[in-house]
Length: 282
Ligand code: BEZ
Ligand code: FE
Image (cartoon, rainbow, N blue to C red; front, side, top):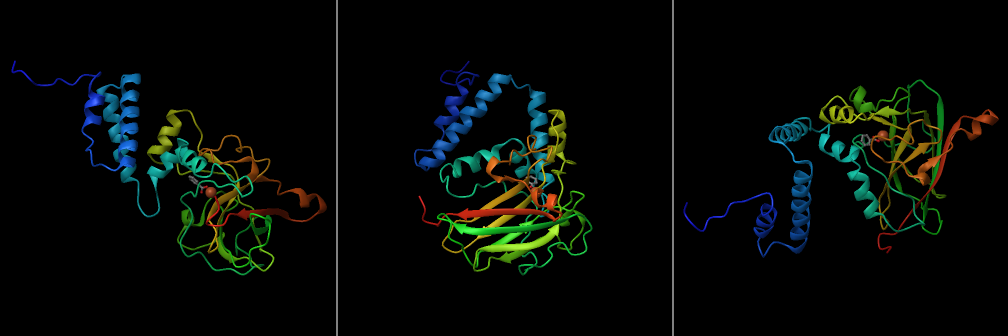
């Protein structure tokens, strides 16, 4: 056997891969790739991944890519159901007790939703229980913010977003907050619904014995120049899936009681005060 050649083993291969990162790679690239290689190699060693399982994993990732187009993002969905999206969110928004909490964007926001006026029905022609939405956009000190752009979207009472039903926009709108920071309009009561589960991520959920459901919620994306964007949802208290959200997006501060006014014979109402931080806030 010729001398001077290296044999890579399960013990020395990790170090060999790390040694190939070029000295002039950026420090952040070095940090991220070193951790990634270490963790992936440790994972393969820990579970003693077989060649058949490796092949299945490669097939799974290839299929994820095939399911992605402008309407479907299976890679983000995998990140969501593994809790990675909410972990990134939790790290990015660790501080700021005085501002509203964030959660996942999800795949159902659409660019250029119908522009709506306060008071306008956001779900024209959709049959179902009425829900009144009345939210205020405030700064960190509680002062109202006028002119914030607020995108709102939710499902039908059957648990489908408009884009799952066809091309028409409905149950979504873009509002501007009034002088008192208020955005208020009637809509229809959304429902709990499954994340898209007819693809590889759905198969993975089933293989783990997990369900695909998300608890009832309304999405908000608030933008105001000089302030940080807020992407969040408000959840309906009492929903059976609040403790079993397929994407781990629930935070206690985002769960509210929509049913309180019903006792007085009034429609269900979602009220919330959003507090958004200035762009330059610490
Ligand atoms: C949503 O709430 O629309 C959503 C979020 C993550 C994955 C799928 C759907
Ligand atoms: Fe949603």
